[in-house]
Length: 408
Image (cartoon, rainbow, N blue to C red; front, top):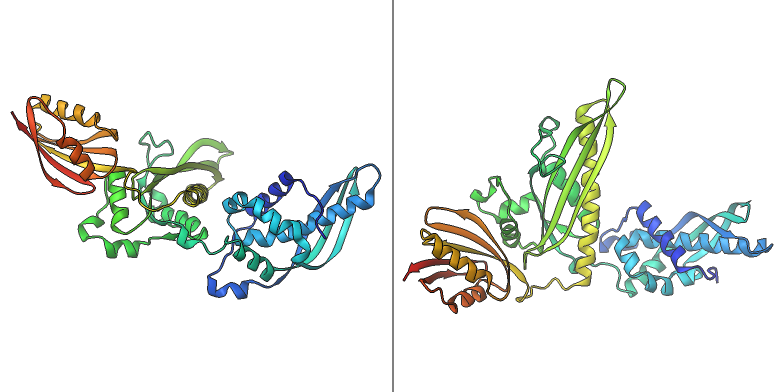
């Protein structure tokens, strides 16, 4: 056997490092045979010399290099989060049996440095055999198990999203530009991203106008309309920082803040905030580069988190899961009645959070995070006593309730 005992921690570190360096390049199923070929791979290996047994250290270094060469093929087929989660299985089925996948090898060069023996080898590795084993382990072709994504960015913001600094308008960096960078990171993970053309076909013309404020409830509703499983909302910005070098070189900071919401429940399942600082003597170039890098980092981080959550938990809708229900309350002219209604609502079993989204002269719009749907919430409201007034629920859907407060 080519591979001798390697500490699990060392092997995990090596495989994860390769995953960070090599971008996955998984083709469509019909092109798998084209991708699967014999590959010549150069790899490094090292081992600590125990006592004076240089020959054993050399053999160990070669073993490690061969394992690294096989790991490079595995990394090209699997995303990093699957490598980590399934490492025990990969170690038992592939990394412990390197001789099954390496046809031959030769040592290109070797060197002794203190107590460390290092080698560089060239190995011919059978990608078809590795591909077949990964398929047998059911680690390939997982798009059906991954969510359909809709990306909705509500517009450029300052790097500190709690403030309203001047935006990078002169950089011509649009929501579409940032969304495309983020979308690429999801498609690299084999998730389907709903494009602008698909969104336009499945929404009404009046829905195409930009929204000044994109609430979670609105985002989830839009995601449901286009049959997305997860909707991504976010803000971004690219600003000139005070740092300078000489008279021309300035520094620029890009920042992207993203959140992922399940459309079947409205629950946030992942979030990330990524920043990047770059330098340039051209303001437009500097801003664009900083925002590009931050967008890619944010997309990669969020995509990995979503895959992790989705492969750990069933994406099927759960009627007992937390959902966003909108309540339109009419007859709120009597403030005391409205306060009582809110108190009763907040005490209902399953109600987690209440937010007042809009108040008019005699009407209020409330969103409720609730363990169930609109019908279940309406049933709960009907069972309660309101002392000085009654209620008339005249419209109920899974996501919305319309109710009128009737003075007693």
